[in-house]
Amino acid sequence: MQEGDRTTPVSSAVLPVVVVLDSLRSAFNVGNIFRLAEATRVERIVTCGCTATPPHPKLAKTARGCDASVPCRHVDTAAVALDELHQQGYAVYGVETAATAEVIWKAAWRLPAAIVFGNEALGISHEALARCDGFVRLPCFGTKNSINVGNCAAVVLYQVLGQWLAGREV
Image 1 (cartoon, helix red, strand yellow):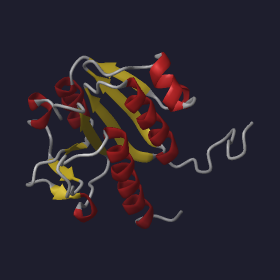
Image 2: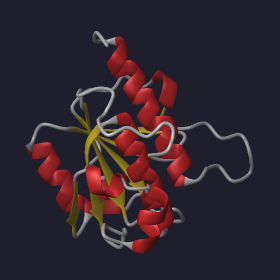
Image 3: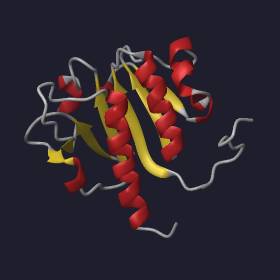
Image 4: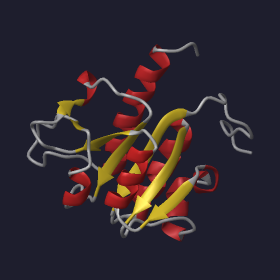
């Protein structure tokens, strides 16, 4: 076992969040998000469209084993996945670059929540956008107006985790 590895989680608490990946192109990004999902103890990941799903060698490389411990389900489209999550009582938030989206650190998350991350080039599909209850964004001041989806997921998931922990005893 490497230093820092554990056989059991530090906490049995589960963050009431489902991560929805809408047609991500890079299996390496997906693996990175699995590792984040395990670290923040989200409920599960839903992969949609062309998003790589375990078992997948490129995903496994960056997931570092987390693809075996984070529950995952593949659904053909994000629209179908979001319809199901709405029926289960989840608020659905899309992470988008639109100026009308709420800045991430001002967002008040209603939990349980489903958080949608879109394709690296095209963003969230139009059908999925129509099913979102709200939108959040990371302010970007450079010319690209976005960052890598894995990096974005880290900021978003830790922001939600921080708000959730602030509202309960740790």
